Image 1 (cartoon, chains in turn yellow, brown):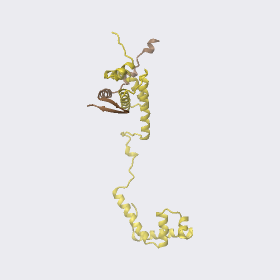
Image 2 (tube, chains in turn purple, brown):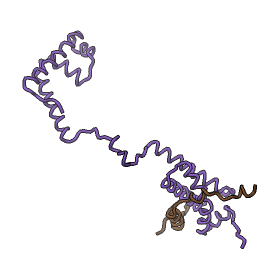
Image 3 (cartoon, chains in turn blue, yellow):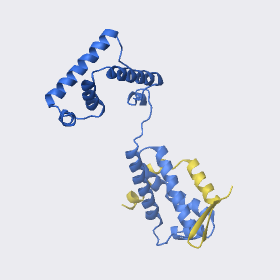
Image 4 (cartoon, chains in turn brown, yellow):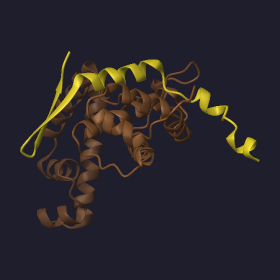
Length: 194
Length: 47
């Protein structure tokens, strides 16, 4: 029995005309070439199946919307689509690298949550409040320099210009402010750690 | 010479998409119809 093989162009025409079997024939004819091509770029069967599927979804949509220009180049056209999807895949994975959890590797060994827990946040707020109360007790000139340096992030040059004293005086006031704070903290045994 | 070049590739036999992928594609193709109205195209998937 002679097995006559219709050319791709005829099968495409039949498919566009509504013969669904023509698509099955086209897929059967080229599946290993296309699948093999994708697999050669991405050696993962699951991803290769996904890209193969996406390739033919594009093919089906293009053919059904009559946007395909047949020039006897069905296979190169499909290969081009799958090539573009492979490129897209690598772009996506580059932006979002995927880690798979294995016995030797746990994702949590490289991931950590640096944000404070509710308890730690309450403690941090309490420490801030205690510190502010202590600062309020400092002599005005020392308090002024400490607030400018620590809370307004000003340099000592800027502080000296702003307060009208020399840099050395500003530095001295800061030193006394810190010494006085330490004294009060030691005296009352205040714990200012989280 | 002709024999050498007409030998069937052994690799291609294993390089095939899963049956599920193929049946999904054939089902999707049967269910999909695209209608063009003016410049807009509408995709309809029937159950």
